[in-house]
Structures are given as structure tokens and as C-alpha cells.
Image (cartoon, rainbow, N blue to C red; front, side, top):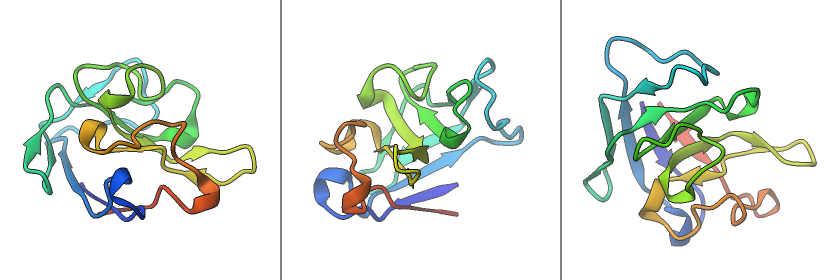
Length: 127
């Protein structure tokens, strides 16, 4: 899977591309108890490979189906913000869905408190 960040602003990792390859055994969506290790997890823009990347859904949070972490963090929602490779889409109080994190430690706004739906922040293109 290639994830291209279209969120405006360099602080949000604009135009960065992250490649995630889980190999021959696809991860199971929403499976929190059996985090799936990822074969390739790399920021193609910065040419940085992430270590201990895994699919890490948050139990009961079906909106956060695409949640990947690095450094062996087991939950995509709680834990070290800089270890969240992707988290989203998640619900805001007004019902909008937005991506909350992108690129782990590659940008300064990789904290759920810094992403703001009202400013149209949190758009990713996946293929």
C-alpha cells in the first residue's frame, strides 16, 4: 500500500509518501489482539525505513481501521505519538472523519491534538 499525504503544510508532512507491505498474509481489520508485523515500512520521500512496524488497530474503535505503528507500539491510539505511523480515520465530535497522524516522527504535527478537521487537515491518498 502506498500512502500519499495531501495535508496542507510542511509541518504535517505534506507530499510525503509511505510504503507499507504486509507480504502474503494480509492483516485482519480491527484485530487488536493479534498485531500484524509488516514486511516493509518505509518513508519513500525521506528514504527512511521504520523499525518494528505493525498493524495496530485500537480495540472497539472501528473508525481507526488503518492504524500502523513503529517501534513495537501495540496500540495505534494510545502510546507514544512519535511511534504512530498512521492513525485514522477517526471520528470528531461533529461526526467528521479525519486522519490524526502521519509519518511518525517525520513531521512536527504528528500529535492528535494538532490535527484539526475545521482546517481540512488530515487528507491521505491510498493505493
